[in-house]
Length: 388
Image (cartoon, rainbow, N blue to C red; front, top):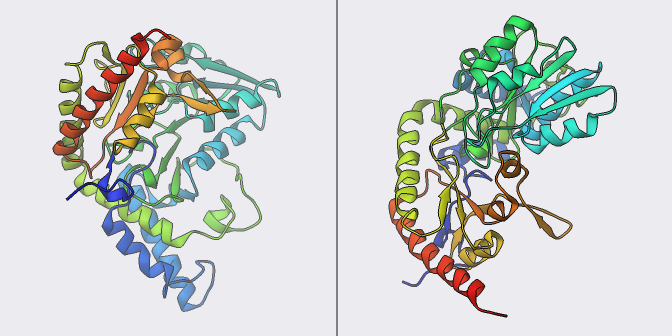
């Protein structure tokens, strides 16, 4: 039967770092809360209290995935909201923020906006291996530092950062650490106590949970001011009626991830290794940070002499969804700030694709993708060689 590319199920999806499809068990758990179990968790009647029980069960599930306790878990709508809340609270009294230049824009851009508003912002760049040096980050910390931000895994490169070392050394200095673990949770083991963090964020849709449900873990005693006010929800830490169906889905996704993490990691790494071992047979291919500690499912590849945005579109037309490291602003494609920060030149950055695998992918999809990828790269290189 011919492939129908108008049907999502007939396409190969390799963009799981952007979002991952919800596990069917997650969807099944959410459905009753979109219908008969529709109560508001703040209501005192039986229907409302059933919703409250569902939210609290999800809180325990998330806490168990992170190695924390349920009262330390705060539900939000996104990792962006959670990161924003911590950074804004830390900056409220002035002082210094120390952030890695690898951070997600919800931290990095916000810090840039706060710079000059009685806030001293220091951005620490990674080395060519895509990893921020713990020593360099800590050297930027002074007595006025209110917060250090270091993500656990970079969303473009997949590189794992030395969060545990930084957190341990900051604890001795009394400086809090925010860890954006959105890309790491559900793919590698994440324990808030082993990482020595004070704040940690995660997003459900990155590990086969629903979009619209995320969580912020706040160490007991760590300072925190609500970003959203006007209600007593989430122990007065985040006003707004809880999104019960999405929170339930996040809880179930967390429980599944905790129970199946070893099997999940093995499957993802087999897919990535299969891809990387074979893609290097093509000429002019560079796998960024191949020798660095990385997430098991992320591969960031540069194709010499190829415009990655054009390649992405051609692959999409052939039924394969991938991503570039470029951001689109005002119709102009700019090289990835992450790649530039680690010393990769703009030409190579604009020739790079991010391929991120998920639990739904198969070895057969990898092989089919490699065949098409080789064809399209060859066509683009040939076109570039033809005189205008």
